[in-house]
Image (cartoon, rainbow, N blue to C red):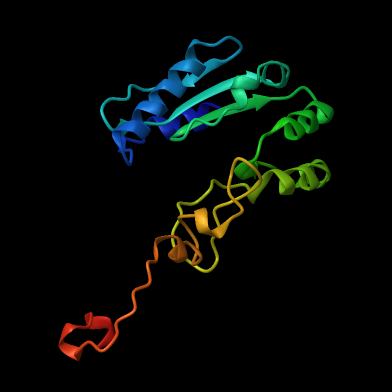
Length: 187
């Protein structure tokens, strides 16, 4: 936890896509900070469209008792859930809502517990990672941005992966136009 706090404390403020997204992030961060059962590991001040990383920690029992802790806060915010044992870990995984990603931070000796989690996580997320952090997203063949509800499994509603092109595509038919009037790509 200290290593995560130290590493993230060095990350500067980043601009959110819109003011509304930044405001929603600040409200979500403030909601978690004001709620019971969580402790701040790293918090930051957000202003205008800027946001910096925030990390909170809670117990598995608190997380399971408070569904609000499982609600998404879009932006650089994380909650570390400390579980007492493997059974509580499975209960937390089962209680997850649909996610874009789920990440296992594990050592080799955690493989058996990770194997027990995989059938749950692969039904909860569109991307499952080990010992890393989700990458940014882009329009690329090897990337999808989906998962079970509330994430989207409909390619027409994604902004990443090659199928995202269809979301923003508006076909136009050019009939009997002279070449000089066609878009450059069609000349």
